[in-house]
Length: 398
Image (cartoon, rainbow, N blue to C red):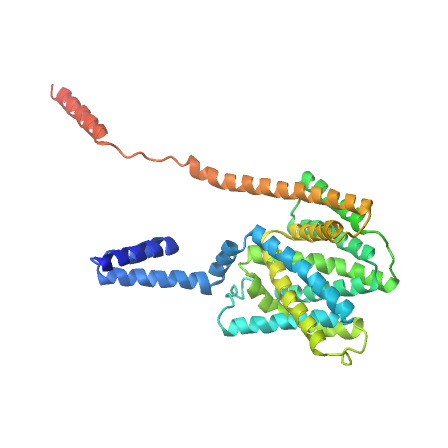
């Protein structure tokens, strides 16, 4: 009796975990061995598809990391790496932005190699589904987007750097329209305009720049927009997961960062004081850099390139308002007003996205509701039909 109870409990557990396959396998012990063997093979095939194929890995990523989880994860890591990079480039004095980015991506590649050796790296889609040129282009633009962003911040004022970041939003909208004929509603365009104006009022307090810094900032805008679009498109249309795509593109990014370093970094990196404290700060920054790359890829796979840019602007406004209320910093009433306006525009944009998602889910359910269902006949209905048939046969005999 105890064995039967344990067997039934195991059946209920695996039925809820594995669905129909689990119910077929955990039958009562009077099931024959052949049926149990076939059910076991089906379970093994299901688990293999969920773990070792690109489609299954993509479904697992969508289950575990939805839009809210991905955006929250990216937001928290982005705030952490801002503080870490301020520590590294400020107090530590590591003024080599391209080399710091190279350390981030090299560390990410090393961690991904460890995941692959432990069979923890998700499977990639077949090579025929995604041409190598797309992966190479993503790795290249990722190097320029990450490296030029740090270089622009070093050579320009914060205000000019923020103006360049704001320019990424209309660039993404224009690029998606040209490449994919993807258009936005007028309400979304107005909401994004309010966000951009609010962020400009909140952050653009000075526009000091030099010719070299301005060229770097302008050159950074297009790679940054294309980088976000490719990350989002490849994951949503080609069954790529974030980790699998990082594994394929990071070597290309490292190669281009090595090529950019002699041109954009100042000399003297080998003479830097690599003591324990400085090295620890750089290692922490590298770990956060890996998490930032992963969380950004997850967010782009779960949402869109435009939503990811809006998240970055939301992060800027939250840091500004949080510093005002928590650390008693005084950015000025105009900056606070701009941040509040930007957050209001972000709220409207988020509400429009949620309403569109609800409408899309409703439209997918409508065809199922229109399918006519056949009601099974009751015993009374069968008796009535037999009476009718008898009466009709009697009238025919007469």
